[in-house]
Length: 281
Ligand SMILES: Nc1nc2c(c(=O)[nH]1)N[C@@H](CN(C=O)c1ccc(C(=O)N[C@@H](CCC(=O)O)C(=O)O)cc1)CN2
Image (cartoon, rainbow, N blue to C red; front, side, top):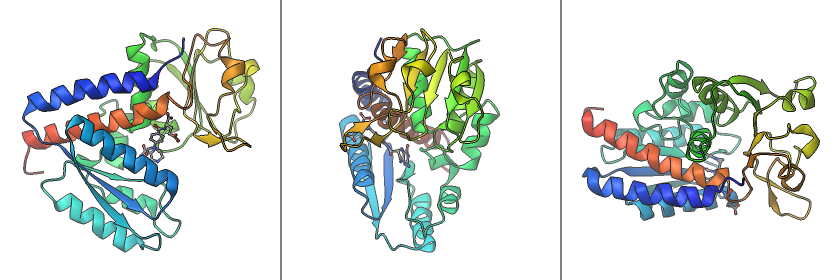
């Protein structure tokens, strides 16, 4: 079974549009883009397009590639203080001179629609998530929508990044999977991957995961955004060699990526709802 993130995200966005119309709430998302990285520019454009589709107001802050940490922090602070903004998204990666963690820490936890703030991460790891990072939450939505059971399964997450690997592991743990996180220093990586009922790869190596690394019937989730030697977009998973072995697999493109955007829209409504209950925030 191929898990179609493109179709599913469209379905979720249509539902969200209705929900927003009926809610009487006016969510708004502010994006912060520093520099002119073409991929980041494209992702930000996709986010604004999704906002338009579902009825979320969106505003953009753009800073030059040479912006300092202080300048980015001042932009975030302005958005924190703006009562018309319900969610703030700082597009990553930031240029090397900017202190990324300081910027993440500066976003008000109530507006942290990316779910990267330490408060959001703490809530997630304590088993009481509120705003959860969009890519892993999008994967959980996908698993639920396709009726894939998680409780009691062996889940292996390859990659320990703050935006994908770590929150993914926490979500799977909260859903009662037995979770192993692998990383660059993991020994016997192939043997561990072969034991996975659910395998999530977010390591950023083009077509690294091949058929012999995957257990028969495994669910394989590909978070990779890579380009192969011909410049073609591809994931971490060698789709052609894995598709025959997996019981379910996400393609790249058209798998996890669109779910990231749909989840961002859902998080923005969630943040706006919380503010409407507690306008003093
Ligand atoms: N602040 C954040 N920065 C980044 C995040 C994030 O969640 N928050 N994630 C990634 C990039 N990203 C969103 O920002 C993202 C990546 C890919 C897609 C997507 O839909 N990709 C398409 C293919 C698009 C193409 O043609 O290249 C797909 O997979 O089908 C959406 C969002 C890093 N930064």
